[in-house]
Length: 441
View 1 (tube, rainbow, N blue to C red):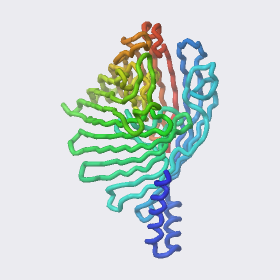
View 2: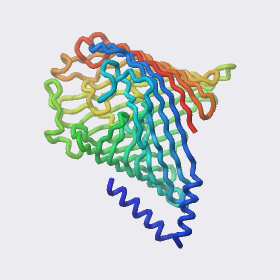
View 3: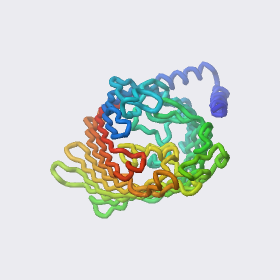
View 4: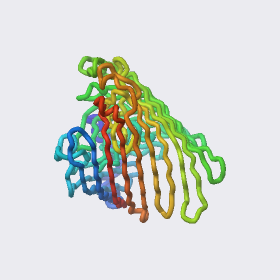
């Protein structure tokens, strides 16, 4: 992070050196500050989580509010601008636990209360609009947030201390290069690393986009996770008729060793296996059909299906680590498989799903059914279990009252396979319910 500060100071010094007079600079600087735009977000959340675990804890009940106040300056010399966002979560009802806190007699809701600076960065823009260099605390989202995201579903969210360069290399080609020094997580904690992330996107095909990525991570205190992840994503839509289109989304990623990984301190013994190297894949594909419907109360409908495979441990190879993903979006809203973030889902995962959605009376309704299977088995772990985890039904209803206010009701019902529970596989029956009201300006 010291290198980032040096770059920022050099850039500011260049501004001073190019300024004809200090008085003129102060006038311009004052105008940039006073002509900026404030931002405001408030999100009220009520959540109930009932996990049927062996500890027989009481169901978790949480009611809290997230408030974010921000201010974005106007541009100085059409080059410099800055943004700061202050964040607070206040728990009104706190009958729940989380990793490292809360009341351990209750089930988990991962929303500790507290305050922090969520974002604070400086933007340096190219005068021709072909690029932006951003340095400081910031959210970073790549593609469908399957590997890098802000975990915005949780009340605290995730941000990164980073330097990020975005360039439009040529027409329809965008390139991002990021150096990350710290991850600020959803538990109001942080971890240090040296992350080198690269993302290249091509948008020259009408209705289609292709991206290539490489995420190289050297963790400060978690050598087990040191890894290099390379992949490609292609997604888009194919119109069939005026009111019908086919959507598709395909991602393939491979993970191998990087930095200190391979030293004894990065080994982990699981069952009778010693996991030493990274050598796993992620594969994701989904297809959906969208209709625009000319009906009195129904405006749009969609039905689709998908498959995701996350490789588990194989001999001395570690499971695939989904890095800093917004995992809640993917393998069921009951969050039974968050261990993919961290590379600790040793049996891997095969997730088959079908989903349907409809827009009616100004509301959006979505239903998703998941069938979860293991991808592999590990000698000496869970009696060599290699069968299904269970199934889940997810339901969501969203209502936008206007452009600034939105509400939702959401539920997840996870049914664990009896054989999995009997063999000690870490899945349990669970029901989770949310209702939220979001205000944003």
